[in-house]
Image (cartoon, rainbow, N blue to C red):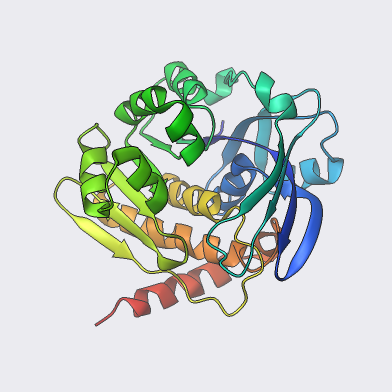
Length: 299
């Protein structure tokens, strides 16, 4: 049984950055998050991919002991094409082909309904609500979102936020959703909806954690090599929930550690396209960079 399940997209991406131009590489929020999470816990994916999804990518996931029984295979795989300029904080979307993702049912296998740690990745909030309704007794439900859902399905999105323990959102999305330029104000407004924890991601500048009584500022990691930031936010979320599942500890001090472990894996992810860097990553490298993060905040 998967202790952790991750719901999100699986896709094939065309990505262009100042450092390369890649075609039909593995992508999607569920892919990045589950791979990052698998460094710490056994994880299952709930998603949809096409019948054209390459066998080599299936093998890549199964060889990392990622359970794929929650993936539907039908039609054509979701495709996304994007480009980054030297400001690598935001991609310019060139083309999107939804394909089979429009038929995603988000039905959980029976073995997933008792999962303890849940990450609702960036998908339609109506599907996020559907997943929550199928869960038995989760210990932690975390969710991520994006500006598209804030603009198109805000009411449903608010309903999801009210039902989760942890909200993950980036700084631009937080300002958009809560109609404020002040991130502290946005964090407090989010907490008032019901989550115990709110994490506002700031890209290369780190992340902010808000609770009703405390806040924490995590640094970004200064990278010497930066090729492709695609999937870094999802890798952050996956690493974070993976650490929480591994330790089975959702206290605020351990959540701070989880944020740093998520940031660590996300920083490695940015060093190459798709999962190329994560494929060669090991726990020795992860723990070494985690310790570097600790030293960056000593004074």
